[in-house]
Amino acid sequence: MNETITQRVNAAIVRARTHAKSYGVDKPGAAEFVAEAFFDNVWYKIRENNVSRPALRDQIRAILARGECLNLHLPIFSRKPFSPIKNRGPFPDLAEIHSLTRCAEAAQVINALSPTGCRITVLADGFKYNRACRTPDSFVNAYQSGLAFWVAHMDIADIVNVVNYEQWISDRLPTPLLERRPGLYERHIRDLTEAYSPLFDPDDLTHSMTAMERAGDIGNQLAFTFWSIVTSVYYEDLFAFAGGTSPYERHYGDDVQRLYVAYTSSLHRPLGTLSRRSEHLPFLGYLPPGSCADLFRTMRQSAWEAAIRYVAISLTDRDLNVLRVIEPDAIKLTVHGKKGEVHFLSATQQDAAMTAQHSTGGLGGSPTAAKITFRYRLERESHGEIPILIQRLPKTAFHRARFGPLFDLQTIDQPIGYVADTALIGTGNLHTVLTRKG
Image (cartoon, rainbow, N blue to C red; front, side, top):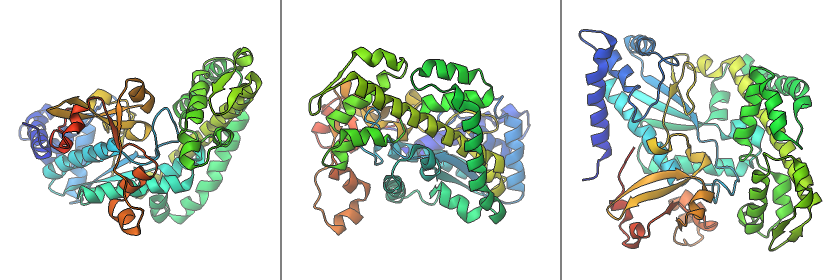
C-alpha cells in the first residue's frame, strides 16, 4: 500500500516524541519535541557543529514561551536557468511540485508538535540573484507565478507561503537599511573586481580558479560561485549567435544545445586547445575554431562577472543581516548546510545534492509504484528517458487562467517531467501509482 502524506507526517511526529529524550530531560515538552523534529533525516540533514540540539531547543522554547508562531525561512526556487543541459524549459515541473510538497510535509510536522503553530516562508530569490545571472525578468515572474499556482492547487497556502524575496525585503526592511543596500552592493562589486579580476584569465579557468582559491576566503567563495553558476548564467551572446525564429528554438534548439555542450565541455581546458577544432552544427555549418574561441571567451568573461555580482549580492545582505533584522527569531533553513542554519532536504534522499530549479523532475520505479527523481535533462535524454508533454490546450484566456503553468508548459512543449518506463504512463493511471520513497 502506498504511504500517504498523513502517514508520513504522523510517523515523523512519533519519531520526534520518541527521540526527544536525547536532550537529557526527564519529561520532554513541546520545545524538545519540535527541536527533535528538525533532526529527522527524512527532511533534514543537520550536523551538530552547525546547529546543536540544545541551542535549537532553547531558541524554540523562547519563541513558544512568548506564544509566537514558529516561522521558518527557506531561500530557494530562484528560477530554472536557460540551460539546455539542466532543463528543456524555464517553467516549474514535477521537481518543483515535489519540493513544495516536502516543504508542506516538514512544516506540518512542526505545526502538529508546536502549541503555537508553524509556517514556512519560501523566499523565492530569483529577482535577488537575477542581478547576477541576468535571466529575463518575465521568465522569473512566470516561474514564481507557477509556484504560486501549485501552492494554491495543492491547498497548502495555510502553511507554505511562497514570496518574491526582493518584494518581501522591500516591504519589511527599515528604510535606512533599504536605502543603503544598492550603494553597498555597488561598492562590493568595485572592491571584488579590483581585488580579484587581475587573477582571472578567461583563456585558462583552471589556473585562474586555483589562484583565486589561494587568495583567501572571499577568493575561495568566488571560485566556488563561478563553478556553481557557470551553467546558470543567461548567455546573451550565445543565444544571439544561435538565433532562431522563436524563443524556444533560440534557447533550446539543436544548435544552441550543441554549442552549449561544447562550451561546458571546454571549461576545464585552455582556450588555446580549440585552435585546431571546429564545431559542426547542422543548421549553421562548420563553426571555425577562432569563432568558437572568441564566443567561449566572451561567455567565460560573462560568467566571471556574474560570479562577482552574485558574491556581492550575498555579501551585501550578509552585511545588513536583512533576514535577522526583519524576523530575528525565525529559524533559517538552507539547501546547503552552513553554520547556524538548518539543512533542509528539498529533494529526495537519493537526489539530496540536487535542487528543483537546477534539474528536471521525472518518474522512476516500476509499473506498480513510482517515485519522483531529480536529474539533468542531458542525463535523462542520454539514457533514453521519455518526456511527458501536456496535451495541447486551446489558446484562450480561460485556459491560460485555469491551467496556469500547465498552459505555459504546453506552449513550448516543455515536459512536466520524464519517465524511464513507458509502462508508467501507458495505462493513463499514473497518478494512482505515485508514492514517496525518500
